[in-house]
Length: 219
Image (cartoon, rainbow, N blue to C red; front, side):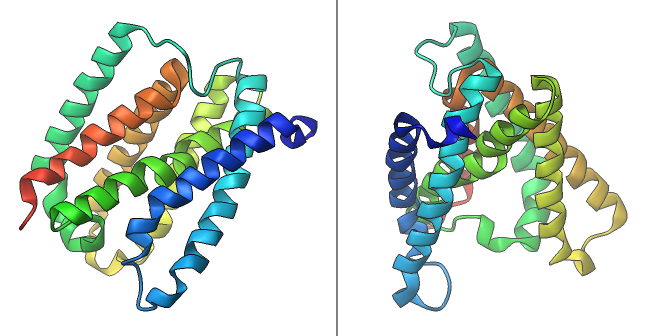
């Protein structure tokens, strides 16, 4: 826990949390029925992001022996990430989005403004919550990086399962199994990219996946 309270870690976490909250603001401003509470939402996310980023900066580099923001990533990893992102976006667009749009319509942007909001929210908070922070906690508690990666995948499945509960009546067992499989595959790819090239590769992969929504936007 000592690394968690180091001044350098806290400073980096504070800056990252402020940027995270700022990036989330556009979507939060249109979230829910109480626009007057938007700054409360921003404050809550900012505080949560601060704790998560502090864990990332304190434990990922110390116990994982890898940089969170590596200064250099091998060109072949950029190419691999780009290819996987395009393949994943294509598969999602043709085989998953039609069903998911009916189950969770708010996860799909309807116009360019919402698309920008979703991109910022996904890159700033979702990847932190589903990959960066869980990996930091797991790599500190578990014996090696492979076990930590498995922990991240299981955590992602837990979150996804809780989300599916809200629409359980509309999901058949075969559909649920398929969704869980692709969620696990997505989490595994994400954590592998994170281990190989830090946040840069994860953000590129997530950005390419989100870009598939461009083909369904209205005016």
